[in-house]
Image 1 (cartoon, rainbow, N blue to C red):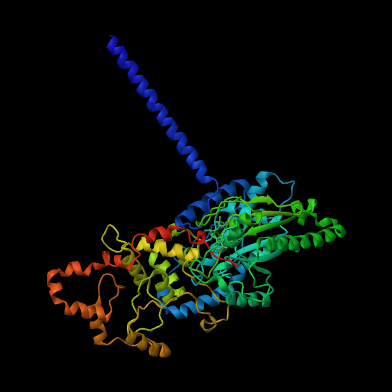
Image 2 (cartoon, rainbow, N blue to C red):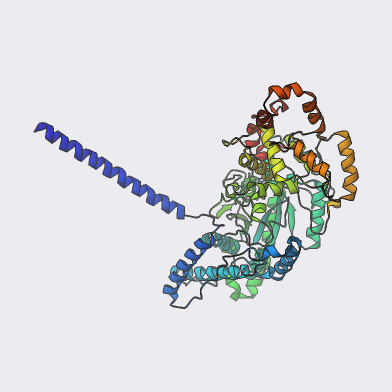
Length: 590
Ligand SMILES: Nc1nc2c(ncn2[C@@H]2O[C@H](COP(=O)(O)OP(=O)(O)OP(=O)(O)O)[C@@H](O)[C@H]2O)c(=O)[nH]1
């Protein structure tokens, strides 16, 4: 009897315990779901997701408005018929179409509002306007020659931008100095002026420490010619100076950074930037206030803080361009989170600097664009590396932009030379770069093949962080105008005769049809590493040391890339070096 009682009590205790666990699990899931909903950047929506999401939204709006919404056209097949036209010709036509539709590529506008509107009304209007905007972009994609790259699809993120634009007098568009136009959104400038004609946009060309001064000069010229207000800046250098850190040389010679007589080419310091921002913003406030005094009806365009005569400067831009780093440097302490992962800032923040100046940090936004591929966006740091599915596509962007000898020098690797029948100046193939990198570091996946995914991630991090130097030139400038990227010692990858051959062929730049000897040569030099030093010397060594070939089975020899290069000095310890964000490394600034 006593035993029975005990068993019942035990059972009910266990039952109660299990029940509590179940309850807490459910709660946990609930809060997790809630958290997920908070504010997440959405740039990738599959067709089916888009259909479901838009159907839900359309239905919701229908019940609110009782109005008929036309079905949203979804372009499910974006690739049709393109295969029939030659790639080059296709690209040309695409460019024409892109230019034709450039003006349709707008950022979404906030619908007109008044303070008297109810929250629900405001919300419904904004959602309807956003849906119309998405519809417009989808209809653009119906044109098979137009391909939109991933862009921000979360209304709440755009809402943050709307608020920052409305509040700010001066809007600072932060761009990455290595390709300022990629990160510039001209329509944002138009939109800011639609809100208030007095607002101005300034291009803050951040990460200027990664740009040689002669390239800065070229960009300065371009900005001046196109009436673009700009400032060269480096948040990382300003922060280091503020903290009294001595920045040591990183991967290039910094001595010529400030070698310029042009005050507009100099990289601004913190105090200079603060006073310039304050000056520009206060000018705007002054003009507006004097206009407002004569025209009382323009109260709608007054910024919130203009009542206090405090100028507001808003920072906007793509993810990862350095908005938060800039604000931290300007404020003088860490007020907003900084990481190399795009999309860190989720909500806009305001920071009062003084009675005269307030700063406003907006979450990074991926603006709609035609011109760049998803992989370019990953390589440029605006989409997270985690979104990379085809790592070779992303590495191709790197291989195309960083000169071959620079890659070899930075990584201390030898990339396979172009075959005699190929264009001698061709960039390395992604596969060549990845395999040479894996070989030098001994990266092997569980399958036993080179761990290209790991290599791709590391290379991309270096490319984004600045360890692999690269930069774009202003439109209209050719490669001949490109200054040589410095600090690239001869890697000694090329045998004397080979390099002579290549100089001759470089001049002609023609691709020849491979002869039978070339094909046989390629086959004989083929190995899994496809990028190791398969030089003639090595071949000769293999042939003469025939006794070694007898001792080692062929299979083992073909896989030498797995363990090769440990004597090259940068085996696994490289991980320690390269995993550290490149920009935390010290730089010397004069
Ligand atoms: N070399 C260099 N790197 C910089 C500079 N400014 C920022 N970075 C780096 O760029 C990365 C992104 O910086 P953040 O300040 O987080 O960029 P953000 O624009 O606020 O990013 P989101 O939060 O995604 O909007 C970090 O790894 C920074 O260390 C700079 O002037 N020079």
